[in-house]
Image (cartoon, rainbow, N blue to C red; front, side, top):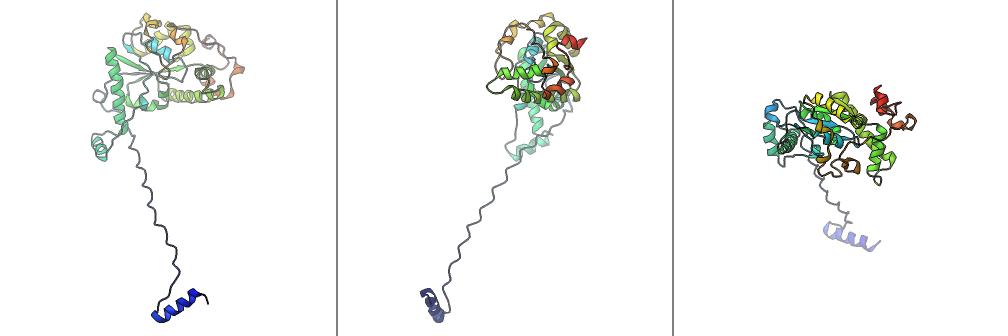
Length: 301
């Protein structure tokens, strides 16, 4: 018999107790991490009274993919005495949140969810720029607006949409050339296609005026006249030259390359032959009327 057993037997005989091997204690239960609070509601509603809820009247949105000539178009439109077309404003990235539950309650009592508060901010920022310019209507051209066109339409029910299209292959090539170290040609086509699809969905869901970049560069005055008719404003010939209206062209806020800095409308690049269109872009070429043509003149005839 081992010493431990002998000791246990003697202790039990004398006291009625015995030594038992201690069981390993369980580690204390760790508290479950607190659940992350859900983000405040981003719900929003259309304003019921534009005179109360909005400062802007009939804002104009250029809905276009990247590298489709939106900087050129906004510079041309900015030449009109009634239109103010600043650099890309990226308003969809301006967010609002209530830092306490009481603030959330207070805003809800006013009928304002987080999305509604953001719309008020968007409207105020753009109206501020319009007032500074001393004009009547603002033009916003950030390409990523295509992804939130429904929200823009809900924020400003009286907004006017201009859909600016360009040959999908030209868009993809220009997107690659804008930053070749960041995107190879295939990556550029894939990324640009996201914007094109978003623009197409907006076209299908919202009425507006369609402009083709190739038409704009071939006949600026003619295309601008048609845009003025759509916006119900008079045509002003000085719109067609933008040399003195370039301002501070910066990467990330619009085009910044030498071509746009020339101060005058330059011809667009030669369109690809039908056999040069990659399979991934064929459906978009079909939707936008570019299949089987080498020039916009061919498409118009």
